[in-house]
Image (cartoon, rainbow, N blue to C red; front, side):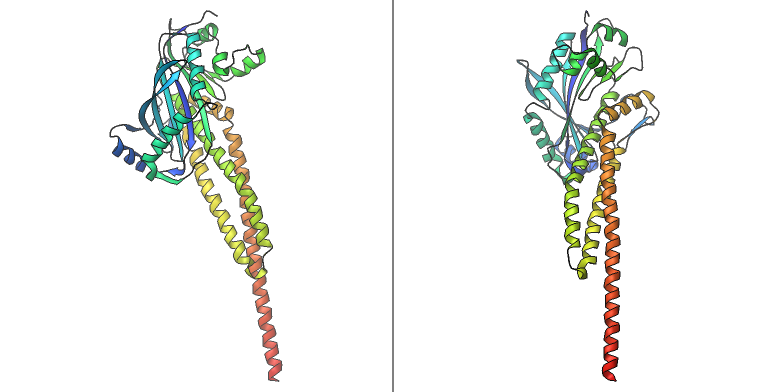
Length: 371
Protein backbone atom coordinates (compact mmCIF):
# COMPACT_ATOMS: atom_id res chain seq x y z
CA UNK A 1 0.00 0.00 0.00
CA UNK A 2 1.42 3.37 -1.03
CA UNK A 3 -0.64 5.33 1.49
CA UNK A 4 -2.38 8.69 1.27
CA UNK A 5 -1.98 12.06 2.97
CA UNK A 6 -4.75 13.36 5.21
CA UNK A 7 -5.12 16.98 4.12
CA UNK A 8 -7.95 17.78 6.59
CA UNK A 9 -9.56 15.86 9.42
CA UNK A 10 -9.96 15.52 13.16
CA UNK A 11 -9.60 13.00 15.94
CA UNK A 12 -12.41 12.97 18.51
CA UNK A 13 -12.10 11.27 21.90
CA UNK A 14 -15.49 10.78 23.55
CA UNK A 15 -16.28 9.87 27.13
CA UNK A 16 -19.80 9.49 28.52
CA UNK A 17 -20.92 9.60 32.15
CA UNK A 18 -24.16 8.87 33.97
CA UNK A 19 -24.64 11.87 36.29
CA UNK A 20 -28.31 11.89 37.33
CA UNK A 21 -31.70 10.20 37.22
CA UNK A 22 -32.68 12.89 34.71
CA UNK A 23 -31.53 16.32 33.51
CA UNK A 24 -33.86 19.28 33.08
CA UNK A 25 -32.51 20.52 29.74
CA UNK A 26 -34.20 23.93 29.86
CA UNK A 27 -32.93 24.60 33.38
CA UNK A 28 -29.43 23.46 32.38
CA UNK A 29 -29.56 25.76 29.36
CA UNK A 30 -30.56 28.70 31.54
CA UNK A 31 -27.87 27.90 34.13
CA UNK A 32 -25.13 27.72 31.52
CA UNK A 33 -26.38 30.84 29.70
CA UNK A 34 -26.02 32.74 32.97
CA UNK A 35 -22.44 31.50 33.24
CA UNK A 36 -21.32 31.96 29.63
CA UNK A 37 -23.79 33.82 27.43
CA UNK A 38 -24.02 32.78 23.80
CA UNK A 39 -22.16 29.48 24.05
CA UNK A 40 -25.01 26.96 24.11
CA UNK A 41 -27.13 25.34 21.46
CA UNK A 42 -29.53 22.42 20.96
CA UNK A 43 -27.95 19.57 19.02
CA UNK A 44 -29.38 18.63 15.66
CA UNK A 45 -28.06 16.49 12.84
CA UNK A 46 -26.28 18.66 10.28
CA UNK A 47 -27.47 17.25 6.96
CA UNK A 48 -30.36 14.92 7.72
CA UNK A 49 -33.89 16.37 7.40
CA UNK A 50 -35.63 16.64 10.80
CA UNK A 51 -38.41 14.22 9.78
CA UNK A 52 -35.83 11.57 8.82
CA UNK A 53 -33.94 11.61 12.13
CA UNK A 54 -35.27 13.17 15.31
CA UNK A 55 -34.23 13.37 18.95
CA UNK A 56 -36.87 12.57 21.55
CA UNK A 57 -35.66 15.60 23.49
CA UNK A 58 -32.68 17.27 21.79
CA UNK A 59 -29.58 17.25 24.01
CA UNK A 60 -27.99 20.51 25.09
CA UNK A 61 -24.61 21.13 23.46
CA UNK A 62 -22.10 23.33 25.29
CA UNK A 63 -18.70 24.62 24.20
CA UNK A 64 -16.20 24.41 27.06
CA UNK A 65 -12.78 26.00 27.30
CA UNK A 66 -10.00 24.19 25.38
CA UNK A 67 -7.60 21.90 27.22
CA UNK A 68 -3.87 21.44 26.66
CA UNK A 69 -2.32 17.98 26.52
CA UNK A 70 1.09 16.50 25.86
CA UNK A 71 0.71 14.25 22.85
CA UNK A 72 3.70 12.25 21.75
CA UNK A 73 6.11 14.71 23.34
CA UNK A 74 4.54 17.88 21.94
CA UNK A 75 1.89 20.15 23.47
CA UNK A 76 -1.46 20.34 21.67
CA UNK A 77 -4.69 22.21 22.35
CA UNK A 78 -7.97 20.34 22.04
CA UNK A 79 -11.42 21.87 21.62
CA UNK A 80 -13.97 20.60 24.16
CA UNK A 81 -17.72 20.20 23.81
CA UNK A 82 -20.27 18.67 26.18
CA UNK A 83 -23.73 17.30 25.58
CA UNK A 84 -26.38 16.85 28.24
CA UNK A 85 -29.10 14.26 27.60
CA UNK A 86 -32.50 14.34 29.27
CA UNK A 87 -32.14 10.76 30.56
CA UNK A 88 -29.17 11.71 32.78
CA UNK A 89 -26.12 11.13 30.59
CA UNK A 90 -23.36 13.62 29.79
CA UNK A 91 -20.89 13.26 26.93
CA UNK A 92 -17.56 15.09 26.78
CA UNK A 93 -15.68 15.30 23.48
CA UNK A 94 -12.04 16.31 22.95
CA UNK A 95 -11.34 17.33 19.33
CA UNK A 96 -7.89 17.49 17.75
CA UNK A 97 -7.79 18.96 14.21
CA UNK A 98 -5.22 17.47 11.86
CA UNK A 99 -3.93 18.62 8.47
CA UNK A 100 -1.29 17.57 5.95
CA UNK A 101 -0.39 14.33 7.71
CA UNK A 102 0.79 11.18 5.91
CA UNK A 103 -1.48 8.25 6.71
CA UNK A 104 1.00 6.67 9.09
CA UNK A 105 1.37 9.99 10.91
CA UNK A 106 -2.42 10.20 11.21
CA UNK A 107 -2.56 6.69 12.68
CA UNK A 108 0.20 7.62 15.14
CA UNK A 109 -1.81 10.69 16.27
CA UNK A 110 -4.95 8.61 16.72
CA UNK A 111 -3.16 6.03 18.86
CA UNK A 112 -1.34 8.74 20.85
CA UNK A 113 -4.62 10.50 21.71
CA UNK A 114 -6.20 7.21 22.69
CA UNK A 115 -3.23 6.43 24.94
CA UNK A 116 -3.44 9.89 26.54
CA UNK A 117 -7.17 10.01 27.29
CA UNK A 118 -8.52 6.50 26.64
CA UNK A 119 -10.19 4.21 29.13
CA UNK A 120 -6.89 2.83 30.45
CA UNK A 121 -5.29 6.30 30.78
CA UNK A 122 -5.44 8.73 33.68
CA UNK A 123 -8.88 10.33 33.86
CA UNK A 124 -7.83 13.61 35.48
CA UNK A 125 -8.70 15.70 32.43
CA UNK A 126 -12.15 14.13 32.18
CA UNK A 127 -12.79 14.49 35.92
CA UNK A 128 -11.88 18.18 35.86
CA UNK A 129 -14.16 18.86 32.92
CA UNK A 130 -17.05 16.90 34.46
CA UNK A 131 -16.69 18.56 37.88
CA UNK A 132 -16.64 21.99 36.23
CA UNK A 133 -19.77 21.21 34.23
CA UNK A 134 -21.59 19.67 37.19
CA UNK A 135 -20.92 22.70 39.34
CA UNK A 136 -22.61 25.00 36.85
CA UNK A 137 -25.68 22.90 35.96
CA UNK A 138 -26.15 21.33 39.40
CA UNK A 139 -29.68 22.75 39.80
CA UNK A 140 -30.77 20.94 36.61
CA UNK A 141 -29.74 17.47 37.86
CA UNK A 142 -32.60 15.37 39.23
CA UNK A 143 -31.32 12.84 41.80
CA UNK A 144 -27.59 13.19 41.02
CA UNK A 145 -25.57 9.98 41.08
CA UNK A 146 -21.85 9.38 41.42
CA UNK A 147 -21.19 6.16 39.52
CA UNK A 148 -17.93 4.85 38.10
CA UNK A 149 -19.68 3.70 34.93
CA UNK A 150 -18.35 5.33 31.75
CA UNK A 151 -18.25 4.66 28.03
CA UNK A 152 -15.38 5.68 25.74
CA UNK A 153 -15.32 5.98 21.98
CA UNK A 154 -12.73 7.24 19.50
CA UNK A 155 -13.44 8.76 16.08
CA UNK A 156 -10.78 9.08 13.38
CA UNK A 157 -12.38 11.47 10.90
CA UNK A 158 -10.94 12.36 7.50
CA UNK A 159 -12.57 15.16 5.54
CA UNK A 160 -10.14 15.05 2.62
CA UNK A 161 -7.22 13.05 1.27
CA UNK A 162 -4.78 14.23 -1.35
CA UNK A 163 -6.05 13.22 -4.75
CA UNK A 164 -9.68 12.96 -3.56
CA UNK A 165 -9.95 9.15 -3.69
CA UNK A 166 -13.28 7.33 -3.47
CA UNK A 167 -14.04 4.77 -0.75
CA UNK A 168 -12.71 1.82 -2.77
CA UNK A 169 -9.43 3.62 -3.39
CA UNK A 170 -9.09 4.47 0.31
CA UNK A 171 -9.53 0.82 1.27
CA UNK A 172 -6.99 -0.17 -1.39
CA UNK A 173 -4.33 2.41 -0.50
CA UNK A 174 -4.36 2.58 3.32
CA UNK A 175 -4.39 -0.09 6.03
CA UNK A 176 -7.21 0.68 8.48
CA UNK A 177 -6.46 -2.29 10.73
CA UNK A 178 -3.71 -0.72 12.93
CA UNK A 179 -5.90 2.36 13.45
CA UNK A 180 -9.00 0.34 14.35
CA UNK A 181 -7.28 -2.31 16.45
CA UNK A 182 -4.49 -0.32 18.09
CA UNK A 183 -2.23 -3.30 17.43
CA UNK A 184 1.26 -2.94 15.98
CA UNK A 185 1.71 -6.64 15.21
CA UNK A 186 0.08 -8.05 12.04
CA UNK A 187 -3.35 -9.60 12.63
CA UNK A 188 -4.61 -12.85 11.13
CA UNK A 189 -6.77 -12.74 8.02
CA UNK A 190 -9.82 -13.76 10.07
CA UNK A 191 -9.20 -11.00 12.63
CA UNK A 192 -8.72 -8.42 9.87
CA UNK A 193 -11.92 -9.46 8.13
CA UNK A 194 -13.88 -9.29 11.40
CA UNK A 195 -12.46 -5.85 12.17
CA UNK A 196 -13.52 -4.47 8.77
CA UNK A 197 -16.87 -6.25 8.68
CA UNK A 198 -19.03 -3.29 9.75
CA UNK A 199 -18.35 -0.82 6.95
CA UNK A 200 -20.82 1.39 5.17
CA UNK A 201 -20.89 3.81 2.24
CA UNK A 202 -23.72 5.87 0.79
CA UNK A 203 -21.90 7.90 -1.83
CA UNK A 204 -18.90 6.58 -3.73
CA UNK A 205 -16.59 8.91 -1.81
CA UNK A 206 -17.66 8.34 1.81
CA UNK A 207 -16.89 5.48 4.18
CA UNK A 208 -17.68 4.46 7.76
CA UNK A 209 -16.00 1.51 9.49
CA UNK A 210 -17.24 0.64 13.00
CA UNK A 211 -15.63 -1.37 15.78
CA UNK A 212 -16.50 -1.82 19.45
CA UNK A 213 -14.50 1.18 20.71
CA UNK A 214 -13.59 3.30 17.67
CA UNK A 215 -14.62 4.25 14.16
CA UNK A 216 -12.99 5.49 10.98
CA UNK A 217 -15.08 8.05 9.09
CA UNK A 218 -14.27 9.43 5.65
CA UNK A 219 -16.70 12.28 5.03
CA UNK A 220 -15.70 14.85 2.36
CA UNK A 221 -18.81 16.97 3.01
CA UNK A 222 -17.89 17.52 6.66
CA UNK A 223 -21.25 16.23 7.98
CA UNK A 224 -21.49 15.13 11.64
CA UNK A 225 -24.52 12.88 11.39
CA UNK A 226 -22.67 9.58 11.78
CA UNK A 227 -20.75 10.90 14.81
CA UNK A 228 -24.03 12.03 16.37
CA UNK A 229 -25.85 8.72 16.00
CA UNK A 230 -22.83 6.79 17.29
CA UNK A 231 -22.68 9.08 20.32
CA UNK A 232 -26.36 8.46 21.05
CA UNK A 233 -25.84 4.70 20.73
CA UNK A 234 -22.99 4.92 23.27
CA UNK A 235 -25.18 7.00 25.60
CA UNK A 236 -27.94 4.39 25.36
CA UNK A 237 -25.46 1.63 26.19
CA UNK A 238 -24.22 3.56 29.22
CA UNK A 239 -27.72 4.09 30.59
CA UNK A 240 -28.79 0.50 30.00
CA UNK A 241 -25.64 -0.71 31.78
CA UNK A 242 -26.46 1.58 34.71
CA UNK A 243 -30.00 0.19 35.08
CA UNK A 244 -28.77 -3.36 34.60
CA UNK A 245 -26.34 -2.94 37.51
CA UNK A 246 -28.98 -1.11 39.56
CA UNK A 247 -31.38 -4.04 39.20
CA UNK A 248 -28.56 -6.53 39.88
CA UNK A 249 -28.05 -4.79 43.24
CA UNK A 250 -31.78 -4.53 43.89
CA UNK A 251 -32.76 -8.17 43.31
CA UNK A 252 -30.85 -9.67 46.32
CA UNK A 253 -32.28 -6.93 48.55
CA UNK A 254 -35.74 -7.71 47.23
CA UNK A 255 -35.32 -11.42 48.06
CA UNK A 256 -34.14 -10.59 51.60
CA UNK A 257 -37.04 -8.20 52.17
CA UNK A 258 -39.58 -10.74 50.92
CA UNK A 259 -38.12 -13.43 53.19
CA UNK A 260 -38.08 -11.17 56.24
CA UNK A 261 -41.65 -10.09 55.51
CA UNK A 262 -42.82 -13.69 55.32
CA UNK A 263 -41.20 -14.47 58.69
CA UNK A 264 -43.15 -11.68 60.37
CA UNK A 265 -46.29 -12.00 62.45
CA UNK A 266 -49.41 -12.64 60.46
CA UNK A 267 -51.29 -9.79 62.10
CA UNK A 268 -49.04 -7.20 60.40
CA UNK A 269 -48.21 -9.21 57.28
CA UNK A 270 -50.74 -7.46 55.04
CA UNK A 271 -49.30 -4.05 55.84
CA UNK A 272 -45.71 -5.25 55.29
CA UNK A 273 -46.60 -6.98 52.00
CA UNK A 274 -48.41 -3.88 50.77
CA UNK A 275 -45.50 -1.60 51.74
CA UNK A 276 -42.95 -3.78 49.98
CA UNK A 277 -45.19 -4.10 46.93
CA UNK A 278 -45.51 -0.30 46.72
CA UNK A 279 -41.72 0.04 46.91
CA UNK A 280 -41.18 -2.46 44.10
CA UNK A 281 -43.92 -0.86 41.99
CA UNK A 282 -42.21 2.54 42.38
CA UNK A 283 -38.87 1.04 41.32
CA UNK A 284 -40.39 -0.60 38.24
CA UNK A 285 -42.20 2.61 37.27
CA UNK A 286 -39.06 4.74 37.60
CA UNK A 287 -36.79 2.37 35.68
CA UNK A 288 -39.40 1.78 32.97
CA UNK A 289 -39.91 5.51 32.47
CA UNK A 290 -36.19 6.17 32.12
CA UNK A 291 -35.47 3.19 29.87
CA UNK A 292 -38.28 4.32 27.55
CA UNK A 293 -36.65 7.75 27.35
CA UNK A 294 -33.34 6.06 26.52
CA UNK A 295 -34.95 3.86 23.86
CA UNK A 296 -36.63 6.90 22.28
CA UNK A 297 -33.60 9.19 22.49
CA UNK A 298 -33.14 9.03 18.71
CA UNK A 299 -35.60 7.96 16.05
CA UNK A 300 -34.22 7.16 12.59
CA UNK A 301 -37.07 6.77 10.11
CA UNK A 302 -36.48 7.90 6.53
CA UNK A 303 -32.68 8.06 6.23
CA UNK A 304 -31.89 4.46 5.26
CA UNK A 305 -28.10 4.93 5.39
CA UNK A 306 -28.06 6.42 8.90
CA UNK A 307 -30.59 3.80 10.00
CA UNK A 308 -28.17 1.06 8.87
CA UNK A 309 -25.24 2.68 10.70
CA UNK A 310 -27.32 3.23 13.85
CA UNK A 311 -28.73 -0.32 13.85
CA UNK A 312 -25.26 -1.81 13.33
CA UNK A 313 -23.92 0.29 16.21
CA UNK A 314 -26.71 -0.86 18.55
CA UNK A 315 -25.91 -4.48 17.70
CA UNK A 316 -22.14 -4.02 17.92
CA UNK A 317 -22.35 -2.20 21.27
CA UNK A 318 -24.79 -4.87 22.60
CA UNK A 319 -27.34 -2.21 23.52
CA UNK A 320 -30.26 -4.51 22.77
CA UNK A 321 -28.69 -7.38 24.73
CA UNK A 322 -28.30 -5.24 27.85
CA UNK A 323 -31.77 -3.76 27.31
CA UNK A 324 -33.25 -7.26 27.13
CA UNK A 325 -31.50 -8.15 30.42
CA UNK A 326 -33.03 -5.04 32.03
CA UNK A 327 -36.48 -6.04 30.73
CA UNK A 328 -36.11 -9.57 32.16
CA UNK A 329 -35.17 -8.22 35.60
CA UNK A 330 -38.04 -5.74 35.50
CA UNK A 331 -40.40 -8.58 34.61
CA UNK A 332 -39.10 -10.57 37.61
CA UNK A 333 -39.71 -7.61 39.91
CA UNK A 334 -43.20 -7.12 38.42
CA UNK A 335 -44.00 -10.78 39.08
CA UNK A 336 -42.75 -10.41 42.65
CA UNK A 337 -44.88 -7.29 43.07
CA UNK A 338 -47.95 -9.17 41.81
CA UNK A 339 -47.23 -12.09 44.18
CA UNK A 340 -46.78 -9.72 47.12
CA UNK A 341 -50.01 -7.96 46.25
CA UNK A 342 -51.81 -11.32 46.21
CA UNK A 343 -50.24 -12.28 49.54
CA UNK A 344 -51.24 -8.93 51.01
CA UNK A 345 -54.82 -9.54 49.84
CA UNK A 346 -54.74 -13.09 51.24
CA UNK A 347 -53.38 -11.85 54.57
CA UNK A 348 -56.11 -9.23 54.80
CA UNK A 349 -58.74 -11.88 54.03
CA UNK A 350 -57.26 -14.23 56.63
CA UNK A 351 -57.21 -11.50 59.29
CA UNK A 352 -60.80 -10.56 58.39
CA UNK A 353 -61.91 -14.20 58.66
CA UNK A 354 -60.20 -14.58 62.05
CA UNK A 355 -61.81 -11.35 63.27
CA UNK A 356 -65.26 -12.50 62.13
CA UNK A 357 -64.72 -15.91 63.79
CA UNK A 358 -63.66 -14.23 67.06
CA UNK A 359 -66.71 -11.95 66.95
CA UNK A 360 -69.01 -14.95 66.40
CA UNK A 361 -67.39 -16.79 69.32
CA UNK A 362 -67.78 -13.73 71.54
CA UNK A 363 -71.46 -13.51 70.59
CA UNK A 364 -71.91 -17.21 71.41
CA UNK A 365 -70.18 -16.85 74.77
CA UNK A 366 -72.25 -13.80 75.66
CA UNK A 367 -75.41 -15.61 74.62
CA UNK A 368 -74.54 -18.63 76.84
CA UNK A 369 -73.75 -16.33 79.78
CA UNK A 370 -77.11 -14.58 79.43
CA UNK A 371 -78.91 -17.96 79.63
